[in-house]
Image (cartoon, rainbow, N blue to C red; front, top):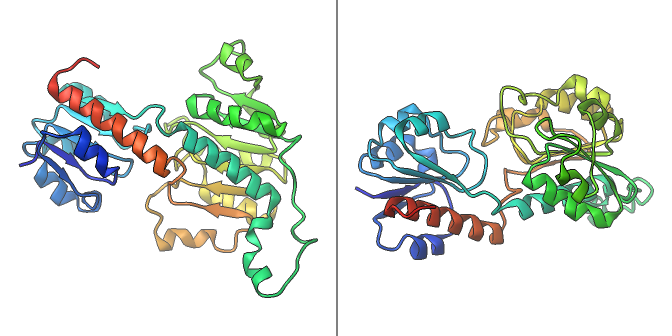
Length: 313
């Protein structure tokens, strides 16, 4: 039986180089074959996952020797952290390794949704010339709102500064005088003001009881009618049905969703997005680039290796 099980995709060179000497079972299809995954965990001391593998009591019960869990990313809502702590299982998120990728996604999505021209390929290739229809807006001079001001939001702010935007942020865990705001020229504001003032609102919060559906019909109605919403944080933070209604009614200017309440997004659930204008949907890929996959993978394997070898972090 393997010593380390890896249930989702990662950089294979990191497995070969970083976990040399361990008996490793790498199969990125295991996330969709939970029974096979449980069967492989009987002797495993290490487990490496992304965001889809659900590390819940059933899985932990099948892994009595488990000592370390590596998370190829930063969110921990798919891992029962409290149960792991009760068992003495160390959990290692790849903190900071994909911040740049997510920040670049946010800026790219904002530019695409404001400018709108990038959605014209089919029309232009069909011989149309819809210049006046596609007269979009500049990011320069707009207000970029950040809900949450952790590491990824700060990377986003750094990349937004050269575009000449006003950067607003709301984070209930930071005081208005926190030096993180001042160092980046960010204006801390109340949540209601963030909604009201943002031309582009990007979400950077974990999924908790407090943040679930925190952007719903009421919050969308409080935003500017041409505002752009970007969620590359966690599915469930946005009420998807309310967002669809706002897009179709034209009471919000556009949206980019990289995360969904249920993932993968199934065809029957995806139907609600059909016909939504100025909408970008991507498959939880904001933090995954060739470069970040390498960084995340190496950070994770090194943390798991040190834990299993008894080396202090």
